[in-house]
Image 1 (cartoon, rainbow, N blue to C red):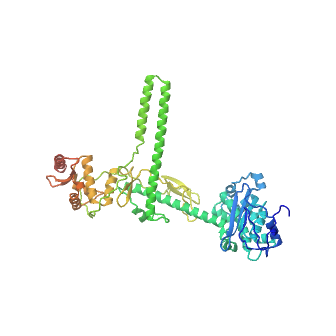
Image 2 (image 1 turned 120 degrees about the horizontal axis):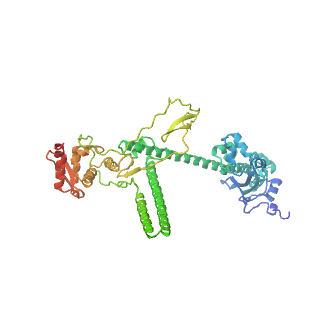
Image 3 (image 1 turned 30 degrees about the vertical axis):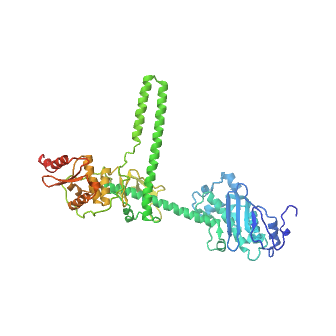
Length: 556
């Protein structure tokens, strides 16, 4: 037979094929039951291996009770007619289905636009698998994709004059591999899972599906489904993050901090995350956003410094000595200004503060009234969103709804249930959101709405540690103003501590050396004040307390 491979040279009871593309695993199987046509195909098999430039591949087979598998490869090109009429390129799938969605007609149109120019195979298992793969490649070469999908097990069986009893699975594997080949090409060209289902339907629980332990088309669908679910999970996370940050701004306008416990109460935790996972997601998102901002500011500063240096060099080359001096002064001033601008304007000194003192007391339930001015107000308030202009007399097209997004009214397409479809992009804006880390949780606020000082006080109150709250506030008043702090001031929001709770905190502080600087004094009218000897002398503290409690009102 010349150069043609002849399997009959092997002993009849031990027929082996060992090539880079064909590997016979049934080493003890003979040729009994194989038709002469099938053996001839095996002896003269063609199309083995990966054709150069292949852009689609697939696999079908099994591993249990002996490995039998078939891999197909193909070079798919545009059909000559479509190429001549419209110049369809290799990535034209998306264009072909544009406007048709996942309809059967649109998918069929795509399948007719492309032709399998060359095909190749690799097999493992028995001679029947090799014969089926070789015939399958010969049948689909030169055919359009829809014609390739029309190849059946009976077509391959007839071309081989049958397969031995017990080898019918190889017929199904070959057909499944053809379907997987078409599906792989469509997926590479951008087909969605719905479009893939329309073009190459998945025949679940069919004989081929049940016989195939390994099916690249099935695996591809599973991967697409997983990707779709992950995309939806990511969108759910973005929706939840957007809701959280919007709520932080709203609560900041109401002088309230936000802790992660609120998100579970509001049912904002995505279904695929636990409350703890979502808590970490919010915190990690904030940290990543801050890192990106810092990197951007660093790059801007470097660019500004480079521009200043270039400007100074240019001025030095073109001006006289005095102009050079003036240019240097200007460059120095600009550089200093850039340096100041690089410091975050809303950086909070309490952003990484951690309260580690043991919890000694429970905050009192009641709060005594105070005639003293309240704690500092927040910076600004958030106006509630305007109501939808239902009676504005607008002619809204059918299938659309007027929705307010970011302060503007826009038309959004409605879904089947009449609900507006979600915008393609979900904006998550963590700008100005600051985190205060405590012993038990962290707390968020918007620093453009709530002052850092008030946020710090609210943080101390939320941590519910009267001793730390008492000591921190007394020291802060003595250091910043300086002045002693009236006991009645603790009754104000956000502390709302009763006089008994304040006295309990004072007594607790006397038992700790860390709070030895704290002192208690009384004005002549009996009002109680506290101060820190680190910042105020006892004489000055007494004088200030007397003026605040008595003399200030006598001067009115």
